[in-house]
Image 1 (cartoon, rainbow, N blue to C red):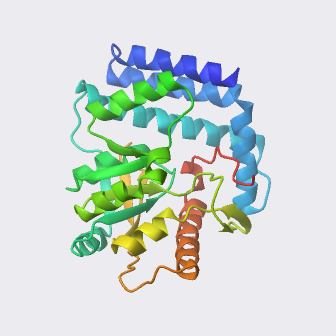
Image 2 (cartoon, one colour):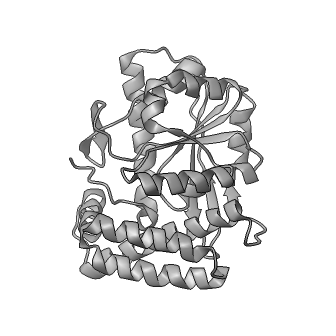
Length: 291
């Protein structure tokens, strides 16, 4: 029933977005986000559980409701911004409000081995390709997980293609790691969101619990020598993105051993923990990490 509601709202939103002015779409998103946060108790409960996981205490009902509403609102705003690019219907000057530590990204680029962006489902994560392009990194691609609903997936892929958002399907990328390595060899930028739930991988520490963690990022960096750059697009008050870039991790001299891969993966998990704790209100914490 929940999936049916989400699917219907998604399809309706795509149709309406073709005709409504940009400002009216923003109002519609606010209304929809409140409606979804109220109707979808499942996501309020998951958000509350993950709050407990991160901070060790139970949030109030009001906090869980507001957090869920804000997350849906952020997702909706990203959707109309991506549609703006795809349909070329709305004018915009920039999606970026501020970039912190751009010099570290330039430093990593100068290595000439491509760049692996370590990021998470936080803030304007869906727009990372567009934000990277705006900073001059046009050869960017994100690893994305497909959704079960084939109709919605087809619509999303169509919008991404029109917006020039290049991506690798997660299921294919697992089987064809050489495609990712080839992209990096061409000095491309590969965006990886490693905070999502995984069914495989060793159980490593994540907020004090064991979480099955993907090793692909660490292995790919060691294999290609591409530096890992933690980068996050946080929502600014003016609706744009504050791009936060942290110190790169270089793996030129790291050997491909299980011990090194595990250590590097735990290091990236710790970076995600720090960012998520600091900006929990923008984290899309609708996955059951504790499973």
